[in-house]
Amino acid sequence: MNKNYTIALLPGDGIGPEITAVTKTLLKAISKKHNFHLEFNELAFGGNAIELNGLPLPKETLEACKKSDAVLLAAIGNPKYDKLPREKRPESGLLQLRSDLQLFANIRPVKILPSLINESSLKPEIIKGVDLIVVRELTGGIYFGEPKGRFINNNEERAFNTMTYSKREVEEISKIAFDLAMQRKRKICSVDKANVLEVSQLWREQVECASKNYPDVELNHLYVDNAAMQLVRNPRQFDVIVTGNLFGDILSDEAAMLTGSIGMLPSASLSTSGPGLFEPVHGSAPDIAGQNQANPIAMVLSASMMLRVGLGEMQAAEDMEKAVDEVLGQGYRTKDLISESDKKLSTTAMGDKLLNAI
Image (tube, rainbow, N blue to C red; front, side):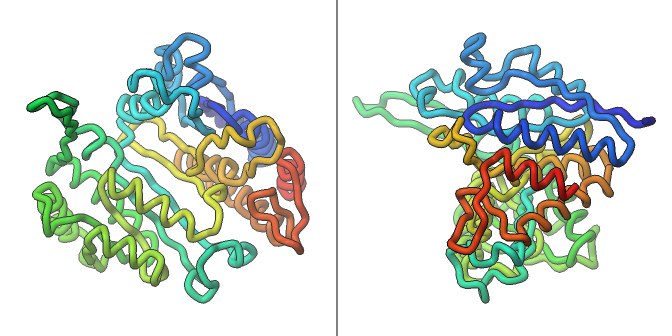
């Protein structure tokens, strides 16, 4: 074996350890098949790190992530941590990790698999053939803008946040989106609220400037409210959607539900250099944790994205994706996707089917 990669593995909370175990087994098998080696460095993060040392992102975890070739995260969070100070909650650890790794671009593919077309709450004729990507700016906007805070004014408590973007930030995320569009259908939709927000006016101007370097890509703009409506009205019109942090957070989850289950979708968060972070779109689902019911497929597909985008192991990624298609095509489902004619599997049993397909 002449290729070795170090993977920072963050099982996290809830169903995270269960879907991580399945995915790790599949990655070991696929790396052996394709003659490369994955060294897994399993690290505390999120709620389990809080239990160990009181912080969601320990220094040693952050340093290990920075030194890795890729970071693979399962899920974090639990309602029991909601009463902690904001800076000590699992979600704050995730924001810090994204910021410290300079992961400014979040990539969420949404593709309707023929075997799952009836799982969506939308009619099959609406979602058939949907294949889109949401590109979300991840380290700017209202989640990171300063100033922010809470204060008392005339005996009334108020709170405020600042939504801000620089020309450079919009240029960087635009380049990611346009490069992706060049690899696909050469169509891009930029989503903003330029009719009322100055920050969105800057956003739109800079996306227009970026488009001059990509004359073969068709660019259009939508206000975020119209984009939300169009995603459920006619999702096939979209190929690549690029938008800011807040709007992207909302629209990417809406787009995810076109598939019928948020448990099916992967994501990647990328920087200009350094390791990318690959994680399922879904949360930690503490209500089913430890019951061997969780759907591991989003985690498996996140690992496939890691192989393809983070490590350049294209054939290995393709084999993992084919295994998912094969098992679903045979009618096997976990509890979240089950219908009368399907064959219900536990988390580990789904992992075994995927391993056999590989």
